[in-house]
Amino acid sequence: MFEKPYRAVRKLLLCDLPDELLVKILLNLDGYSLLQAQQINVRLCKLIRDEKALQYSLELSIAGMEDGPENAPFTVEERMARLKDYVSAWEGLRCQGEETFTVRNPSIWAVTGGLVSYGEISVQTGTTKLVFRKLPSRTRDIADRTWIHEVPVAVQLFTADLSRDLFVFGSARPSTPSSVSLRIGFNHISTGRRHTQAKHPFIDHEVPFEFTEPTIFEVLVCQTYMAVSCKEFIDYDGDNWEAVRNHFPKTSFFVYDWLTGELIFQITDHIQDFTFLSDKDVLLLVTPKAPPYAYMLVVVDINNQHSPERCSVTTSLLLPELVPHLRDPQPDVSVHSRPQFTPMGGFATSDRIPFRTASESRILAIRLEFEPSWPPVVFVPLLTIKPFMNSEMREVSRLSECAEQSVPWEVWGANGSTRVMEAPMSDVCCTWGSRCIFFRSTFLERWRIRAERVKICDFNLLSLKRRMGTTEFQQTDAPSPGLPRLVLDPNTIAKGTYFEESVTTSLPYWVDYAGMSETLNAFILEDHIVFVHGFGPDVDKDDVYTLRVSQIS
Image 1 (cartoon, one colour):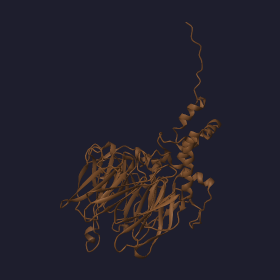
Image 2 (spheres, rainbow, N blue to C red):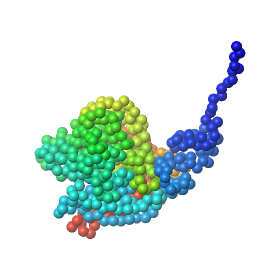
Image 3 (cartoon, rainbow, N blue to C red):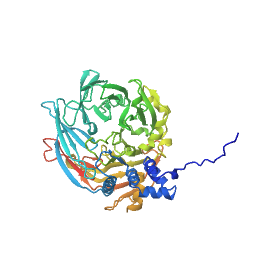
Image 4 (cartoon, rainbow, N blue to C red):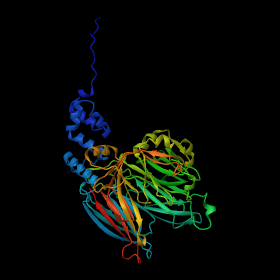
């Protein structure tokens, strides 16, 4: 027999592929990977630099954005031009136009996506007029629109999701001496009628707390899930201090599938706040022990709930431990992160936008408010938390069971691209994507508040590196007109100030200044900054609020 001659088999290398195939492969990479691919060889560097689709993909990543729907009527060149316009407008904080409108006696607010919503309750009729204002965007070709609907209840919890044409509203009433009954409805924003995709027009849920007016309700919607928290109210005033100093308020937290009406899970625990991290992961800010000297972030996978009475935890992360004297009797702690995970970024499906904020680029703002000091705010990129969400899942019936297996702050936070800053007021630390807005403030007459400096901070690292090479900036705390500030130095909070040990963080960021304004609150959205001004000329008759909407992009 004759043996076939041996032929050496040459391995096919990446650079042996034609340009068309290489482009399709490279389009699946994120911004960091594309930048690294440029350094491999001359051919890849030239291909990425010259191919318009790859340049657009790279610029999207640097801006913290993702591409819009394929049916959007924009070419790659048009999308690129609009993206550059969008980035330039936010870097320069150039206002493209302002709209102002007045609201009397607003009882509820919701700012979601490109939608500003509010409700006015009629004491005489017990009904609520709900107003939904879709804000326009010049850069992303979004038209403005307003819907007004009336619901036959005094609304106490409320949110909206324009991508689902959905608004959620609910009211509470005493059920028993020790419980509250919540009725939650689901309607279309476009028509005000019952939502056709919801199997049940209402969901009724019992909350194990006494009914009191100050009870705090919060609701968020993410895709098909609706999460609700009802925080127990405890009066710390008067002579009952000793009785309540070790009784910290609990929160009843529950999640439903609003399409089917199925209860996914419920728990009553020391939950301070919550937010969605993805379409299946919800983050809970929890007090792990009765004296709340330390807090932890617990991530629950709501897609893998085997029983409504137990929650499936993917990870729990400890925050730095507070010093004991900062109980007060308990700090007001909150977490904020937007946009929530939605397929259209919170915009209507009819808005065929060229691009939107990528949910992966979000920052989480964790605020710990003490009296009388200014609250420290811990900023944590979502990408810092995600590597710890791959740990083995465990089921718990009480969130305190997570404390012993929690990841210490020193492991995940100290070197996890976090930053501690100071913001002097509550409710004025609002995030969108990698940006956050807050301001220093002083009180004027009749409870009016003047913001000394309105700040926009941006924690996007890729954008930061780009701007360092193209933007004139300052590194001092005293602002110079027209110049943003770049913060690179690590920040340390001394031992005993707020925490048991010193805390050092080192996430760099930009600070842009949006001037001064007499304002009660401020929100940052994808295309706008919204200022809420209070108490107009009829202050003795009504609560009159003015909303000033500044369109940036």
